[in-house]
Amino acid sequence: MSLLEVDNVTLRFGGVIAVNQVSFAVEEGEVFALVGPNGAGKSTLFNLISRFYDPAEGDIRFDGDSLLSRQPHEIAATGIARTFQNIELFEQATVLQNLLVGRHRHRKSNFVNELLFTPFVRSEERRHRAAVEKVIDFLDLQPYREKYIAGLPYGVRKVVEMGRALAIEPRLLLLDEPASGLSVEETQDVAFWIEDIKKQMGITVLMVEHDMHLVSSVSDRVLALADGKTLSLGTAEEVQNDPKVIEAYIGVSDEHERAVA
Amino acid sequence: MRTVFKTSYDADINLFRHGTQAAWYMALLVLAVVLPFLLSTFAIGEATNMLIWAIAGMGLMILVGQTGQASLGHAAFLAVGCYANVLLQERLGLPFLLSFPLAGVIAGLAGVLIAIPTTKLHGIYLAIATLAVSILADDVIVLAEPLTGGVMGLYAPTINIFGLEIDRYVNPDRFYWLTLVVTVLVILAYRNVLRSPLGRSFAAVRDSEVSAKAMGVNVARTKATAFGISTAITGLAGALMGHFAGIFNNETFNIIISIQLLLMIVIGGLGSIHGAFFGAVVVALLPQAIAISRDTVGGLLGTGSIAIPGLEQAIFGAILIVFILFEPMGIYGRWVKIRTYFELFPFYRRDMFRRQKSYLKTERMR
Image (tube, rainbow over all chains, first blue to last red; front, top):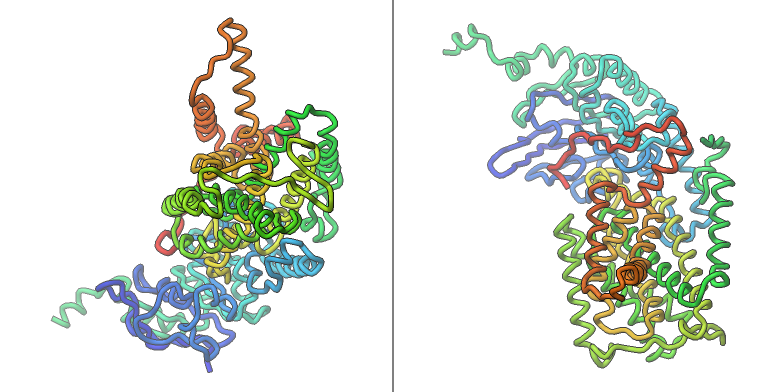
């Protein structure tokens, strides 16, 4: 059984079909990349998995259970964490507080004992902090621990967002364009981190990414989408050389057009 | 500048960052406790009034400053707390020690009840919905005359705690200490919320609902909890306000009070406990300051004291405009800047607290 199964999913916005009968399965322990031109439906698929959108048809199963019966805020508890394309951090909070929100899934206290701040809440806080410190060490965020997000550079915010997703301790990590807007060096760091997330932490990664260099260096399998439809599935190399994918990105050559005509 | 050397996670969990800070707040608390021995009876009353406003301000601050939900209806919850406290004492014969916390609970439940339908709204729409709550409360008090006494109002009984009588006019120092105890307890509860997962989920809802959801925060429930805690604290303030005023009716908690509360925390500084107190100082002491300066100016001009209608509201409005233009972070924001200036002297830079532009946000999903 695959970890995540997207089964024949369709989503329409009015007359526009954003996702058209897309099916794929992500196996436990792999890095799976979604590629495709703008408007292909990659981020929409992420939002479907996060349950921000309801599919018109089809089913999404995680670890064998359908996600469609769950509310958006129940998805993290199943073990799915995500980042956002345009960075959705808590701006007026520190890096540490942002990462600690990621621990919300593991909250055992309730608002009554939190109002009283009982010793149990304190021991829980220590436990959450220890878990968050592991993430801070992993992503080298030590210099920014007490800094407010509102004052941080873009590259650091990207890393903090990844850290916040890791603080959830997920089984599946959804990364929405982890390298967009990053420098070459920062992209390289992201590539190393994704490798480590897969190998050391044993977390399955599903990512949307435009940087084909990053995609081919870290991903085990790649799915190409265009106009909401599946184009090609295989290794990075196979997908990049698929004529349908090339056509979607740069169009058809004149000779081909003439031959068809 | 102080460097705090942290050796355990508890340093970030504790109430105070370091010993010196704890010592300063203890000194402040001692000063607050001995204040009745230093002040005249009139000044004690003013100090009590300020503390009550600060409690109400902290109540609203949890909602507006921490959770980012605007409310123009908090006078309604002052009223709920006030009427519940007095009615529980008068009609059911409960002692103050029971009726007072129960008034908070009732106001809190009323807040949750209001939150369930209204928190689906955002920003200005939520403000309008809560404004309606405030207007409704006024009318309900008039209509429910058998219970509330309508426009005739109700008298607050003398507080009796195990035989110890507390009356604002007979022994104002006792009433001041009672208010101080409530204030300290509310501050503690507020701080506990801020340093626990609940406070962080409030901040999450305030800054990005969509990623709060992705982190597993139940946004609707978090908003309802924020409303409940906020209105419960406001209800406690309302109960104290009733005892402070002695007599109250529907006019005591009108819409102006709601607006004044919101302006108060904006002037004080959104998002901090200090802000609620700074704002309370302005709101509670401004009428007296105006009265005193009017007498002084009148005396200098030889015209005697002239009453100018609406002067208080006008000055209050002017202060608000000045703050929004020049110091959106409120009095507390200004205080932090001054403190930082001296801590870092001479390395303070002018743009140190300048708001950074925030990067593109996903507006498609709320």
